[in-house]
Length: 153
Image (tube, rainbow, N blue to C red):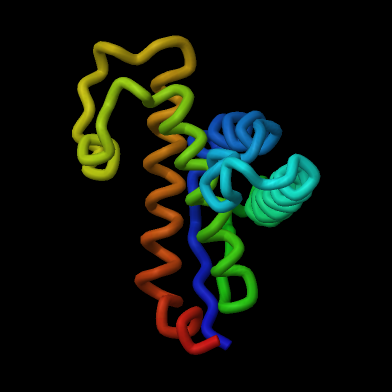
């Protein structure tokens, strides 16, 4: 099985983990009516949102699990075909949450390119932007090195 190990600067990544933990505790990112018709039964809507929240929480926990004692000791995280897909989803959810909370002032093009001006950041905005870019980099690494393995499953 193909596996990639990435060495990260603990001092840089550790503060971003606090942002990820906080974001992991927020409600699901999907709009309640996005996949359930607006006139759907309230019980159906509640069950759907509950399942979505549980799935997202599981994915974020899987991402955070990568940053264990080995990471804090050696600065290394590993990705493989077993965890790649769930990590991709967790990164996507967290990036959406960052975009909808701290990074609303910028459009998608600016966020995706990293071409943002430092001026309009509010409280926590700099750390949120660093986290956004970190999560994007994780996604890019996985897709670049494990994309074929993920698509084969």
